[in-house]
Length: 399
Image (cartoon, rainbow, N blue to C red; front, side, top):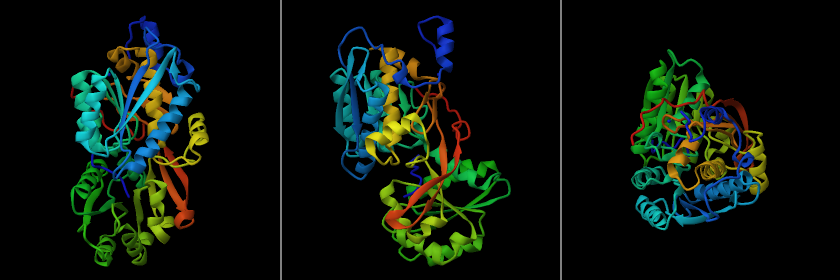
C-alpha cells in the first residue's frame, strides 16, 4: 500500500493581550482542561468511522488512538471541568451515505462535535453537513487535500496527501533538472498520484513521466524494463492491491531497486511483509510508525496500545482537539472554531499547528527505512521533516 491520494488570526472574547498569548501558545490541552460550558451536562462527541469494511483496520487504530488521547488530554478523568465527555461511536463502513446519515442523526440528538472519517470520500460528504448545521467536524485519517479549507467548521487530525508527496521530494534534494518516474496502476488512484507528483515535484523543476500498468497485470518485467530505460533519479511507486508482492519482487529482480532511489509510502505494519526481500532496499515516506518520535504524547500512547501504528496518532490528535474545543468553546461551536484556529500543541508526532487560514494541520513527516524481512521488519527514521517543511500551499476557505 502506498500514498493514499484519493486527494483563520486567533481571536477570543477576552482582552487582546489574552488573545495574543493564546495565539502563540504551544502546549497540550491536558495542561488547561478545566473549563467547558455553563453546566455539568456532558459534552457529546460523535465518532463516525470505519469499524467494518475495507478500512476497518485503520478505524481500529483511530479509535484506540482517540481513547488514549482523551485519557492524556484530560489527565485520566474523561472530563473537561465538571463535564464528562460522552462518546457515541457509529460505524460508517467506509460508506459516505451511512456516514452522512449517522452525522445527521447525531446532530439531531444535540451532538455538536463530530470526529472520525477514516475514508476520504466520507470526509468530503460529512464536511458540508457540518457547515450546514454549524457543528464542529474533525476529520481523521482521510488524506484527501480537499478537506483542508472545506469550510470554517471542518478541521483535520491527520496528514494530507500533499504532505506525503513533499516528503517524497525530500529524498532527491533540489528537484531542478532531475528525472522522476511515477509507477502506478491505471485508474483513479494512479491518476491522482501522478497528478500530485507533477504538481509538487514537477513544479519544483523536475521532469515527471510515468509508467502505468493495467490493474489486472500480473507480469511486471516489461514495466521494470521501461523504468530502467528511463533512468530516473527517483522512482515514485503508487500501488495498491494483492499484486504488490509480485510487483516488488520483479522490480528487485530486474535491478530497478539498485539502480535508482525508489520511494513509496509506508502503510500499516500488517502490510510490511508484502515488500518481501525488496523492503530493505526501498526508501519510505512515512506519516508515522512506532519509534518515529519520542514525545510525551507518544509515550502515553504507547503505554496504552503497546505498538503504535500508522493511524493511532490521528485519533490521539483528534481527542486533543476535542478537549481544546470543549474547554475553550463550551457549547458555542463558533468559539470552538476560534479555539482551534492557530493553535499549536504537542502531539504524538511532535509539534502540531492548525493553520488559521484554511485549517491545514502542519506536522512532522518522516523518511524511513525497513530492516529485516517479512513479519520481522522494523522501521527506523532516517530524517524528520518539520511541519513548516511539509506545509501544503494555503488555500481559500470555501465556506
